[in-house]
Each structure stands twice: as structure tokens, then as C-alpha cells.
Length: 76
Image 1 (spheres, rainbow, N blue to C red):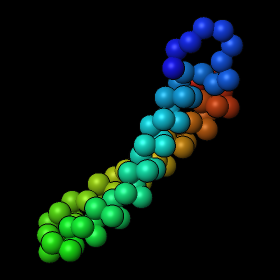
Image 2: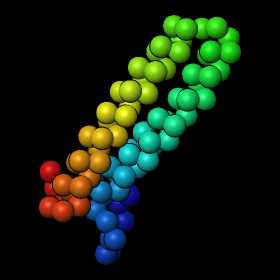
Image 3: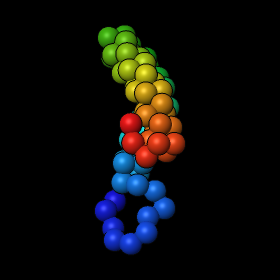
């Protein structure tokens, strides 16, 4: 997001927000993907997708913490 002049938010804030948005969307989409796998009777795929969803949920929590710190202090 590099651009000259005054910025509303820092590049780091933008980067963290972008990753947070993508991870949060993925967490929601895993529900659809798990349903698709269940319809086909693929329990190993359901289990994998559930694990990925859990991992991304943890990542979302970490990202929120880091973003809060960066927004308050300007860095981590």
C-alpha cells in the first residue's frame, strides 16, 4: 500500500488488516467446504478442513492482538 503523502493508516496496519480480513473470510468459508466434503462422505477432508478452520481462528486472534498493539503504539 505504499503511496506518497499523508496516509490514513500505516503500511503495517494495512497489511495486518488485509491478512485479518482474508483469514476471517476463510474461517467462515470453511463451513461451506466442510458441508461439501460431508455430502461426498469424505470424513478425512472434513477433519482437515476443521483443523484448518481452527488454525485460522487462532491466527485471527493473534492478528487482532498484533493489530491492536500496532494501532496503539505504531509498532509491535
